[in-house]
Length: 314
Image (tube, rainbow, N blue to C red; front, side, top):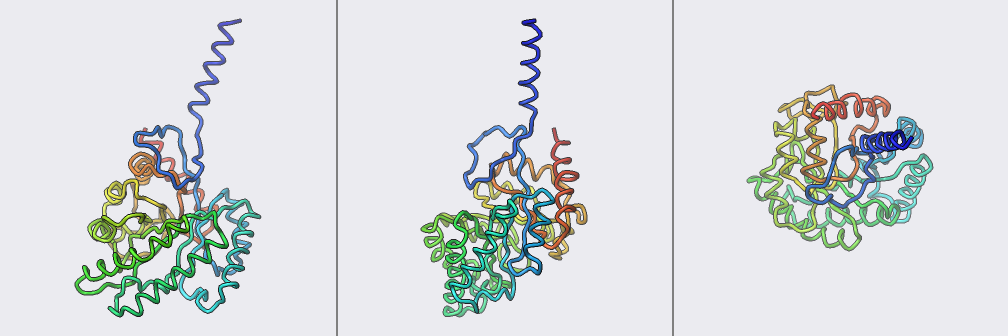
């Protein structure tokens, strides 16, 4: 009888060890060399702040099994024309609607229309106004959704000639914005882009190296469609990774069409997952920037393609 009990206990331990453990999303980076066996990211999905049927789409997101979202404040969102009180009220409503569906806001994509903080026109007054606009939205969102700690930051569309001038303007602007973000306890995460600043490792490095308290939003689709090695880029970012945007594109086409995984030619999803866990020591959300797509289809790719490829590496 004693041998039987010991055998059953042994099987129970083995079963526990083989169980998958979902990572409770945190902004903390895992310790170097931390064990990753069995760890799995919660997948998230983006949603536009002014999306039609916002609440209905939240329900679809929840029904598909998602627990985390990114709220994207996109082109022509209208926030600039709204009073501070109305912006806070709107964002509070969005947060409460998400919470009612069991969803947590992991990240907020700051407005695209204010993306002239890298000063592509070279006018100082415009650069400063852009920073003021961005910081206003960040402050109001932080007031409405204080639990959200990750803010995605786009650079300006286009660059100055030479490009190093845009890099210099970006560093100047970051030096002004980051102390404000730090005081609020949130993270500004600069995104690698297409047709703009920071599409490559080289330019991202020139923009953020030596700049304290800045993080990176790694967009795998952007890296792929400008011809960067998606794994090399991730490894270069290392523990400075703040959040991610996951979607598919076609390699080196420079067409940023945000395809569902499997509809482009990003093939190294298993390596991406492994790199996030081990090299980046990222313990956040595996965020799909695919708002508007069928959440059930997006979730299926997480299990049928991404995790499947990761498991095949073992």
